[in-house]
Image (cartoon, rainbow, N blue to C red):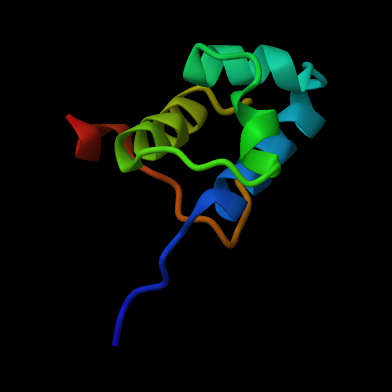
Amino acid sequence: MFAAMIGIPDLLAVTGEYIRVTQIKEVTLSFRVFGDSKKLKMLREGADITLGKFNAALLWLSTNWPEGAEWPRDVPRPIAEAAE
């Protein structure tokens, strides 16, 4: 049996929660995570990213997650030490 795979919908769920909790604009978060203010919008519209960028984005979000906010339960949260 395979472990559940995560994908762009999961990344968008995490970024959506981050935006909801912090009240920052999507373009601001997109720039912070990807260095591209349009990347999150493009992902919502069906664009794709490399596995490296996907993993780096989730790690950035996990490392910079707002204190006291709950990480989306259906998305595995990366651990910074695992990436090093």
